[in-house]
Image 1 (tube, rainbow, N blue to C red):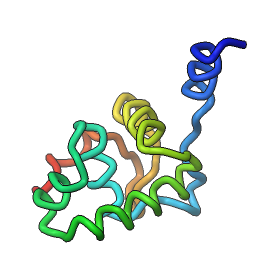
Image 2 (cartoon, helix red, strand yellow):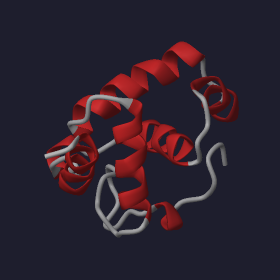
Image 3 (cartoon, one colour):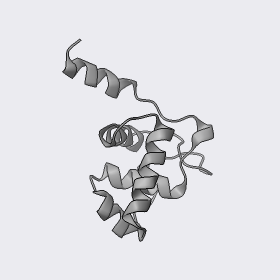
Image 4 (spheres, rainbow, N blue to C red):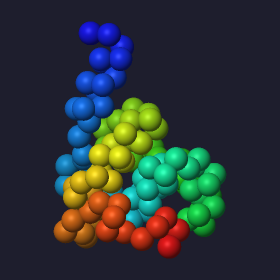
Length: 104
């Protein structure tokens, strides 16, 4: 399997965290920021939190979503954005379309 095929396979097999590992509201907003292509500093500014806090949320996101890097988080965020996957505590359905813009 070539590296391109391997990365495509990884992308196609990424899965959302089990419901007992649902994201917190702030983790979800950080995920939205990653989906928008924002840097940690930009996400921090929009959410009114420290950049170090965004980094901590990214670490928690990667652990909960069972991914190893920011690129995989972004790929998974795109899948979530186009689905109604439940990933957010207290919500029956969740996709980015169901939430206001980051920082709102």
